[in-house]
Length: 131
Image (cartoon, rainbow, N blue to C red; front, side):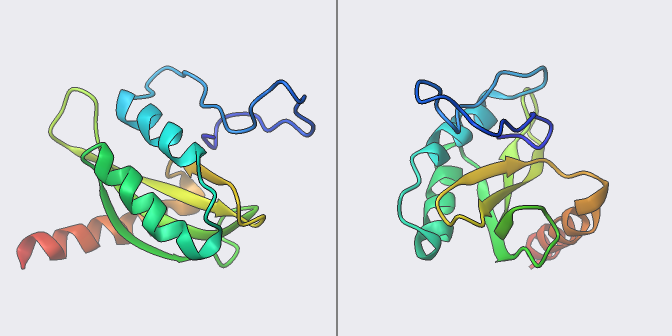
């Protein structure tokens, strides 16, 4: 679920809880990534491996993961990813968040609250490219 999507408090039994919603600007790669992450069943110990495989499937990159430490609401761990931008060779930085239930992964796009993490990720990529 994108951070801009409204959260529902009680989905009906017929409504999937993590179905991606098509939004303006939502790339096919991001949609594919969300669909891949929707099948997460391995728990907190398998989070990084599952996100890494999903990113690789769309020609994205798993940069690193770290404890959320209160940076994002209802989030235990954050994986920082780079995914292809639609119609460009450039990459976009996004976050895959393992929710505190340990069973749900949602996608967050950088905003003012996570700007420092995004900047750190971009500096990390810059250092790797110089090596």
